[in-house]
Image (cartoon, rainbow, N blue to C red; front, side, top):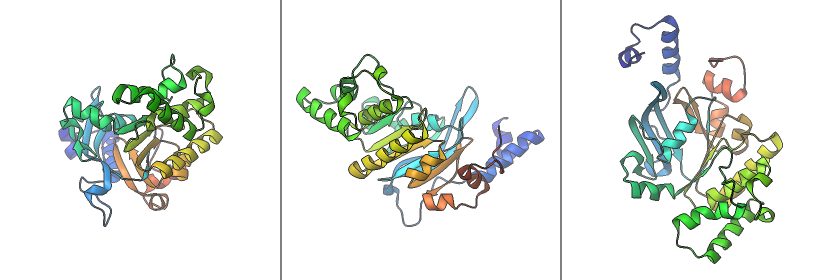
Length: 291
C-alpha cells in the first residue's frame, strides 16, 4: 500500500479499503489536542503526528498523544500495536521518520548526544523483566545508575539505595542475586533502580507481564504508593485492563500505531466509542478482531 493509496484509498482491494476506513474511523487525536482549560505546560510528553516504519511496515502511523504531568497515565493497547516502539521514541532509542516527540519541552530527535543523555537521566524505566544485571547483587543493580551518572560517595549511594529498596519492600534482599528473586521481587528491584535517580518521568513497560493476579495487584498498589510519595509523571504501558482500572488516572488507547481515544479514566470507561468500549470491557463483540 503506497502513500498515495493511503491518502486517497485508490486502487485498494476491498479488504485494504475496509482496513483504511476502520483506521480513519478511530483516528482521534490531532496535534493540537488539549483538554479544556489545560495548556502545553501541563503535559510532560507530547507526540505530534509521529510516523515510524520498521521492515517497511508502519508501526507508528500518525500517532498523536499527550501525557499529562504529575499523573499516572496508562497507555493501553493490544499486542503488536506499537507500545514498546513508543517507549523507545520517548527515551531516544528510536527517532521518528516524521513527526516530533517532545519530552519536558525538548524535541528528542533534535538533541545532541550530551543533551539526550541528560534527558534520559530524568527518565526512569522499569522494563518487562526488570532488566537486572545477573552477576550483580540487588544493591549493586540499584546503585548502578548513581555510580555511572553522579559524583556521589559510596556512603551517599548506600543511603539512597537502602531507602529505595526499603520503599519497595526489598530491604532483606539487598545482597541477593537476581536469580534468587521471584518474578515479583525482580520487578520491585527494577522499580527501585528506576526511582534511584529521582526522575521526573517513570515509564513502566508491561509491568504486569509474567505476574499472577495477586502480585499484579500488589505491584499496582506499590506504583500508586510511590507516585503518591514522590510525584512526577508515571506512564504505564500495558494491555492489562485490570491494571488500568486500578491505577489509571489518565488513559490512552493505542491501536494500529495511533491513538483511538484518550482522557481521564472515568471518561474512558464510559466511552461510547465502539472500539474503546469493546477493548475496555474485554468483549468479543466489536471492531477489534483476531488480526
